[in-house]
Length: 87
Length: 227
Image (cartoon, rainbow over all chains, first blue to last red; front, top):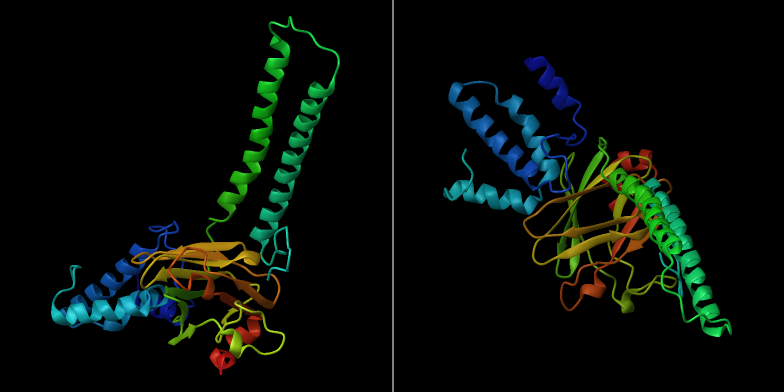
């Protein structure tokens, strides 16, 4: 995906689109996966010195989907080093 | 909202609910017809003077009254499944709004474009204005647009709750640790009421949901409406 596409895609963001990996009522993993993807992308891009703004898509999606209390808890866990996901 | 001594469903405010009402009316009519038929057959059997104590079998009648109910059930099941799948159709929502259940209030989060988060508590009877509905009014209503697919993400911070708005045909359990999605498209503006539908403690009956549905253009102006 060219960087131009992702920039336009982020600019035209309205809300989290339908994700065929999670087609049913239970969207817990949709929120979880996008949270992981954003932080993994951020970690990888900063490690390589790349443009972190391409990761913004995942951030917009998880902010749309995830309850803010979940995000706050996960952020604290990451800061403490007790986050259960692999980033 | 429901009216006193209401027997039927509330008027629909979404296409899915319209389908549900039609299906309900058809299935109920089928049930009434069958019930009255059986009642008639039973009462004629009990009141007739014509009796025959030597009947041994009646294969033709037995065949008919086995096949016919099966056919009727299939005719009820097909529209039912059609509507069930209709509620799960893939659509691209325009907005995502989160509803988090607590003991005993709801929190609504509008985070697509920023962070509008607020709690919605029931208005105690002493705080009601004249004309308000007892046990149904809240201090902050959840404001939603009409004529656009809206995705609601429902969860809970503590125990099981259920986020319900009958006129939109919505009832979704709020499960702690799980994010349930429900999508709807409202067809007309107005204020619509629902009540928590999963027992959640002492004030389970006192955490209603009030949705204020406004025109899309006004909704898109942003959260000025909550001020």
